[in-house]
Length: 385
Image (cartoon, rainbow, N blue to C red; front, side, top):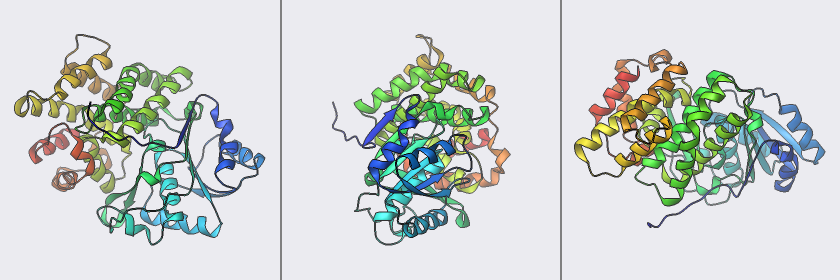
């Protein structure tokens, strides 16, 4: 058994209805909260009531869209002005990433740019982040248990990460009931992201025995739950399972990394206004097919080939399934969910060389089971348009 390290949120609370505990939990973290939330959620008034009932003062900050460096700087200034000593993220991955970034910059000196990868100084955060309560309202990113925040810089059309184990939320409170209001299209996009995030870590070069447990559990549950949640958002069991799969994906990716799907998705998301989950969904079957071909050609003894066979069996629920059957199942989901081509978001063939060049520098690409060539990545993107 190889040596490994595992880190996650200090505490995880999971279950239908645990949202009712959010006020009490917040009161343990601080008495003045900076509440980062999305534009609207049917339970936002209830969250305010729960905070008031537990004597937690709060200042609200709305995130409408994916977070940017400037947005986080604005939020930090407001949190400092409000005297906030804890942060609550109530929303999807963009909201929770914003909350984690704010919590980090509330306690660490200097400017946000000092700590950013790629365009910043890349300094290491040295002070634990302010206590953060992460409450996801979608089942996809697993951001409530990851150690980074992805932030956009629109002026140069890139996304960068603020990353540190010190950013892990103090409490991840995952209540599947909060996802009932998510419409079918967002259920599909976020659900395919969750699927990608239990699949890629399972074949990652950084996989370990602990992340393998999470990935196997998620991959065996997702194939029934995702179509069911898409078909009927009120399906309680499907919503529970997808929230569980999303959490498992966050636990896995934070400790085993990802692969070429996210390696490509990062620059695409920086260059075009496309939902992250939709990008991942479109790319996933194409990347798996390309990985299989590359592995058989260049590394036929690579254990990832057997893992892809296992994945196919779990997704199709056929013990005799071969890796290509898994690819066919993924393609079926892309069709069933109406996942659009990347051209829908304005990407053209002329953009492909820039995406490929940037993807080869992405941290996620380092986890892919085999290094892919520029030609292979180009072919994936051409098919994805």
